[in-house]
Amino acid sequence: MAKPSWDDFESGDLNRLRDKLLRKQVRFQLYAFSPYYRKALEGTQVSTRGFNGIRDLKSLPLVDQSALAAAPDEFVLKPEPHLIQRLGSGRQLVDVAMDKLFGGIERSTKMLGSDYGPVHTLETLGTSAEPVPIRLTRRDIGTLATQGRRMLQVAGAGPTDIVLNLLEPVASGGFWCAWLGAVAFGIKQIAPGYVEPERAASLAKSSGATVMIARAADVLDVLEAAGSLPDLKIVILAPEPVGPTLKYRIHELAGDAVDIVSTYQFAEGRAVWAECRQGSASAEAGFHTYPDFDVIEILMRRSDALAQLGQPGEVAFTGLDQRGTALLRYRPGDVATGGIRTGRCPYCNRNLDRVIGPIRRTDKLIPIHLKESSPMEMDADVVTEIMAHPGVAAWSVEVITGSEGSGRDEVFISFRPSKRVNLATLVVEVDARLRVEAGFIPTQLIASESITPGFVDRRPSETRRLIIED
Ligand SMILES: [Zn+2]
Image (cartoon, rainbow, N blue to C red):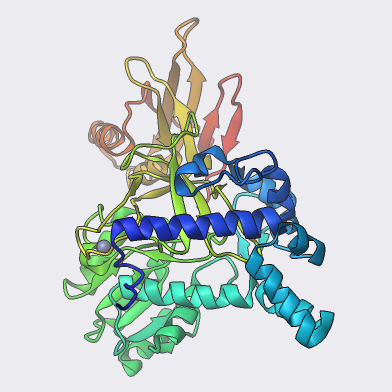
């Protein structure tokens, strides 16, 4: 019987496959060859050979961005001969022995090189000043091509499509995944990177592009410059947060015949995950991950325990087949506000885990506990979007500890109204959006002339200022 396709395994078979891949990756790659994980996993079930698979993952240590940024080389797999002897799998030992026998020690080192020698580097953008290098080997490039092909398939592209790839070929974004994916798929591709909207529109017309992949703001510019693009069927948005207003404007300009698919990626995980085309109009479709390449866990924000299915939480990523920079239970600093869904997608019927967005950055979430409400997180990005109201000229948000002994916080939002705005209407509107979209009612909304823009957290333990990028 033919092996099922990657997205069509029966759940029992898929779980067994993933357990096996994870055991191999953890024991014979990470524990054996990763300087960081060899130390981190000492004394765990992995070193005592009691690690069985995904259900045991939660007992292994979590890793955050700062650990990776502090020593990125420690996460790169280095299969030294003495490590293969001591910790390698039977298969690895046989491979090395055969190579030595027939080719001598030089050849065996070369063989390992093609699997383990980095040939390409991606970079995390993260929050740190310096980008962190993520090393990929030749094997990883092959994997990235497969992942890119799957991304295009999930987004609804087929072999007769023509892709216009307007992503910038920078090390942090999704360009290489999309580019390699189109090559692996055998789809015709035009990949000029970023070009002026007029030039992109004329390329889209002359090539008859049916799929456009670009940053949301660029898509809007190209659609405006083009007037109409009758061949266009699918827009794949670059992996970055896109507000509902921008997405709506793209939809309006592109027309009903064009599906708009969002994606999610962080450079450490390498792959781009897309919504399926069939579910792209629904917030519930989620980003379709690749079950034989990644394990995504969703952690509760306060305890780091696993969240229930569908509950919001922080993303932790484990690669099942990484060489180069290889990661286990790594937190890229993202929160999936819709958590994770497992099993078959109700829209496209693929059997895989789906990460449900919108995705938020952990460093943009400010924990607050207001009077008469449960503890929650104020999302600085959502508040920023609400306050970008045409009637507001400037604004600031201040979080303070409430009056003595209450143990609760207070949130003051000050704003300078634009000229000729009806203040009462503006306050009602902003207040309603904060309530519905941001999920809280500020202690006070204050019209003021002097504003120092941005967020300030003045609680004793938290004093910090969030920079608002705009
Ligand atoms: Zn789907």
